[in-house]
Image 1: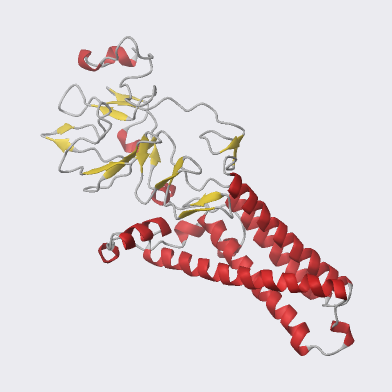
Image 2: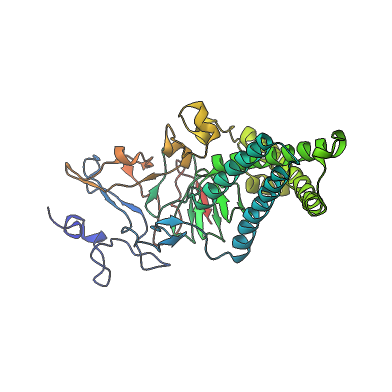
Length: 370
């Protein structure tokens, strides 16, 4: 098959200064922007589709596209706060173990505490090291007739609905709720399950600690429940931490539940409240299967990666897979699941790379560049 540049009409051939695999130059970077090349005939039988080159492999650990392990290494405050969660949890665990060894509490009760802490920390590490749903450079929109599309000027790629560009992670995140410094990561469509489980298990640990220590302090009058001088100081600090954790996680759980019921994330809710447009919201509630997956219900309570019924619907984007030229299929528009606007039976480009904006078309309203 002839090279792409030879198959295209002369008017859209790339300039000699461009790389051979680049059809349309980007005004901001040296990469190509995703674009559609109109067909040479109006019957729609010949299509040309070009995507950006595959991104280079990222660092082994980082938030760059292609990184082997997802972790935000640039936010030092987030790294400190993320580590502090583990320090406080381990401190509480060690205190309970000391209380159990000194017969201050029963071993069965201490084992239950350690089990809940283990689940909480497992969900925390999964939230921290899981891609929150970052939009890849070759992402394309889903079929959304009459809906506007957005373009991120920082990522130089398609920006799905309800997504935001995180300055800490330097990526666009699908269905982004907020960037949590305690997780050192964004909370989005990819790790919302683990974040919810972390809040629930941490809330349970805090409540269990308050009930356990409260029983020993108020209801137990025997010497078996008495704490030594050192353990008394440890339990006082642990009680204060439990009260703070309980109040904080309670407020966060209410915030997440409200977001799930209304379908409006924290960032979008703050924007709507500041602009007094909350009553104009058209978002739909989030389905539990789009958060916890379609696996068995018992897996919902474990830090196991969810299996979504339709990942494209959850993330609000799909990945482009090539082009189709005169029957030689290397990926068709059906594979891409795209909505292509038409004017006078002629497909129009969904992105104008020369102006870095969307073409004005009544069937494809402009959402703007962010």
